[in-house]
Image 1: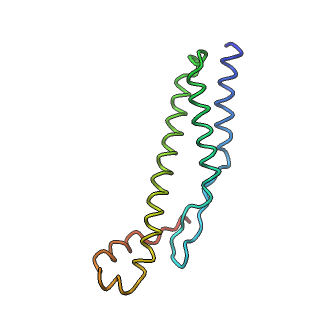
Image 2: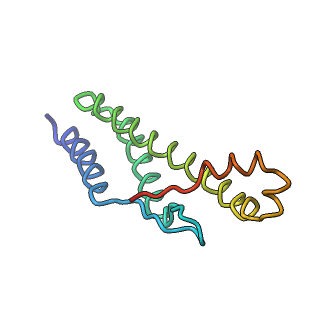
Image 3: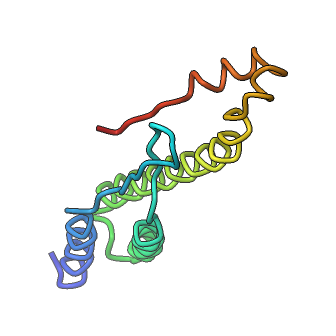
Length: 126
């Protein structure tokens, strides 16, 4: 294995190790029993950085010995990215609707929709 191939392999290992200890933080939302994700900026920055680094590695002429591993790593990163994107969209929508369906007036005017919304609550990560 050439030094360039070894360097690419070390870069993948370094990225993998940087995810050790990364945890998503949850906190209670207002007066509900539901927890929401918070503080995703650092995770998102690490994710974006690793996607770019992985794409750079994939563009190297020395990738052949680790190409499959690199492709698998990129698939994992993209899955995490899509999952977080969808989670955040869902969370934003839920946070918008929570005060609306927390109103007794709305619950009386829209009982069916209110019951459906209550099914999504609470979510407790513990």
